[in-house]
Length: 385
Image 1: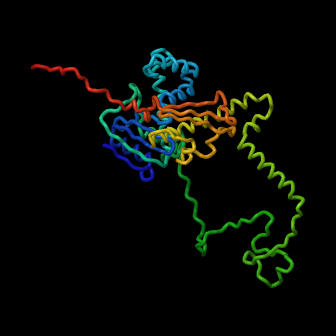
Image 2: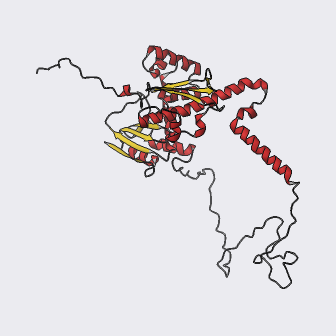
């Protein structure tokens, strides 16, 4: 049985609490604008989470290295060994002594929790819950209770769920006696509350008379109900020139900062290596953004886009994402199951900057995950009583 809807009508905390209260077992998929996240429940508790644009191994690598449970060099070496030996990377890490299984499970739980925190920030999208009797999850994984999740997210961000109101502190060493009630002031004849008059610095107090020739005559009413006009001499143009020059210089610096930030942050000639590293980091971030958009397009259309501009037409990328951070156009080559991306300097590809991605090994896109083994042709075993 499947239950579906939109996040405009049902908020994610309400959906998670409903699944937890009914102790449901199944998988909740939530499709947002840039990603799709699947959450696995066992008896109303979260036991796994996976995203379309990031595999479990990629997210787990960030957590394990970030929490210093394993070094980046050891994880890279283990991943290379795993590609040769086959099997699961999680088992390879434990069996070859890279990390104790307890630390691995703790990192996997933290990675799942962070993915759920990201999901709780969504306010747009579609959800669908598939209930079932059995779901896959890592053996030994400590389930995440929905109440625990919402409470910790509320403590950390204050946006996913209401923050609980703490109880007032109790004093055990001294007796707190209530202060005697102060007498109320005598009732004034008018029920209207007192008003606080606030005036700007340099202005006369309310009710004062401004001496303006031709506008205030004796015997005329004064105070805030009289509108007065103050004639001021026109400012000469010369004092405005420094302000205009400063504003123009600020706009020029802002334009340079947006188009070439490394020119301001790393302006010296001996910082060429740092500028190259910054450009590489910016390009890697852009590649990740394009890959997420392309895989989302593949999930919706069944194939990669024929042209990179199709991602902009579909609303998955902005126009500025179709060029690299240095302003170079991209060479885009697509096949049935993969694509190649490389910046061009003129008509010549820039060496060492290419990026290729495929759907192989992706849970949501690779059709090999959906293959079902054929039934056995062997003769059935008959038991005689």
